[in-house]
Each structure stands twice: as C-alpha cells, then as structure tokens.
Length: 409
Image (cartoon, rainbow, N blue to C red; front, top):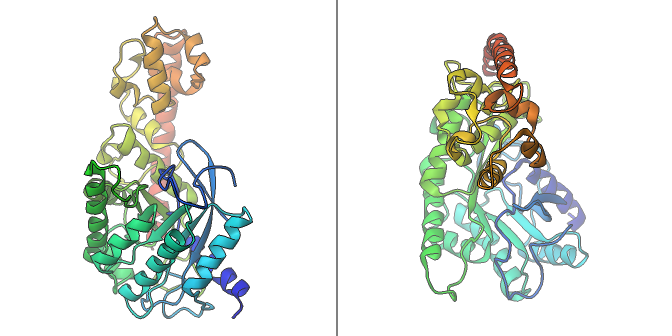
C-alpha cells in the first residue's frame, strides 16, 4: 500500500478521537531545533489565548485486537486496514512541518500484538522526532491502557500531552460495549501519568526534563448507552479530582457502518454534547457542584444552557447587587463569564457600577439584566423573563424525557 493511501486511511480513522487540543503547550520545548507550538497554521486545535495550531492527526495502525462494539476499527469490522512504520510517521511529520502544513503531531493507534508492543512504537516515533530530528513542535501521544509504567514514563518524556481514553462513562458501560477493556487498567495508566506529572511539577530544579508539560486528557463516548448526563458528569468530576486531568472530552455517539444491532440507530444530537461541555465548565471554573445542575430527570435541558436553567430554578437568589455581591455569587449570574466577573470586580474598585459600565465591558445586557439589581428597569424585566423562561423549561421536560427514552430504546 502506498504511503499516500496509508495516510488517507489512517487520518480518516483518527477523526473519531476528539482529545487533541494543544492548550498548555506553549514554550514546553525551548532549546529544541525545529518546530514550534506557536504561530498560525490537517487538524486544527486551539491554545488558551485563541491561537490556531495545525496537527497531523493519525493512527499508527487501525488494526486492533479488541472488538469494542462502538468502534469503527474493532476487530470484527470490515473497514480497510493499514499500518505505518516508525520511519514513515517520522518522515511524514517532518516533511509536512517543513512545508508549513503542520506544527505538531497527534498520534494514536489500534492495539496490535500487545499493549506494550503498540506503546513501544508510539514512543519510538516521539523519541526519534525529539532526539534525532530535534523537533520542538507539539507532540500528543495516546497512552495504550495496560502498557507498562516504564513505557508511560518514556512517553511523557517526549510528549507535550498524554491522553488515555476512558471510552465510556462507567465501568458498567465498558463491560457492556468493550468487554476486553478494564476500567482499572485505564485508570491505572492515567494514575501513573498523573503521579509523574505531579512529581515533575514539584521538582525545584529547572534542569529537570519535562514530563507531559501540557498535562493529560481523556475522552468518553456519550449516548451509546442509556447513561444519564448526571452520571456522565459525575464520572468526569471524579476523573478531574483523581488524576488532575486538563480536559475531559465528550464525543456524541454516531452510528457507524455495520454497527452492532444493540447500539442506538440514530446519532446523538450534538447539542447534548455541547450542553455537557457547558456543564463541565461550570463545575470546573464556576464553583458549581455536579448535582446542582440537575433535577429529577437527570438530564441537561437542550433548549437553554445549564447555567440559565439553574438560575431559573432558584429565583429566590436573584437579582444580585452588582456592586456588593462577592465573586462566587457573580459567577452564577447567566451571561457573566469568569473573565467578565474579574473585570467587573476590578472596575468596582474604582467606583459604583452603572449600566454604561457594563456595556463598556461588553456585558450582554439582555442576558444579565433580569438577574442583577441596580440597573434601570431590571426589576420588572427580571420578573417577566424569569416567569416566561420557567414556563418554557417546564414545557420541555416531558419532551426531554421522551427523547432520552427513545435513544435508550
């Protein structure tokens, strides 16, 4: 098979993995020869300040020993198979970088021969890029769950970010759809990487070699099982606390060719995936607890964002006085993001806030006005909008329950 055909097959096979962000990678390989994680730019990823980073996103091979029912590359699938050699991946990466097509590499793989055999190939690609080619760009390696701790340690020496996919939200889901994988093995690999990252951060010597300086992430497929949004986010919250993850990625299930008959026949709406990301942001950066975001149905509303839904369920807490409320309360106001809140607090030190000040800070007045006090006309607007939106939420609940029950069926 030609290299061009391999690239077509294995780049297409890698598109299902969403955990390829390069955030946190700036300046992690200073002193290297070629490549950079900075600049403008294939797969596009974004750094925290909004810069676009182009990545070569491929699988080393789409052959796999495992037969995960939701995966296009499972052993029983009749998809076209291909495999790179280490030399081919290194050459592709360097050639594409020199032509200014990419600034980094995202490398994953199906499992062939054994977990250690596959992990050795991925590590060897990264080693040759760093040591022989002096490549200083972004490298994201997938940890093969169950690989030896020594190989995970080597991977972190050469990669900017590591990721080990939990695949599904719960151990029960994993046993149902991917019986050859074990939650204990996956979390064991994540735990070892987390310990190495933590140890390197505590290392006071600036000469200590970096270890996955952009941290680690994971991905879970949502909607392939009837697992609720509340359970999904509880699992994500546990992963953040236990392994210090930089990000959990949620991938809405979409039926694949020759899909297992036990899986849903319709794709999960991408809006559900979007709501999960919004809720994830709320408990990571806005001080919410996962269970605060849910009522009896254990599902996030699709018609409004979870922060607004929470505010509508707690009208007794609003409106807030923008000139007196502490930061943790302002973060719960719909329409106020963390950066806007910090800017408001800074402006508040200079004098009393007015509606014009909010507009100058580019705060969305239609979103914020019903939930804050002291703005002209906010009182009546608050009562009308809260009543209207609460009615909309109640009307949508029956529809939501019916939707998730049909997906489960």
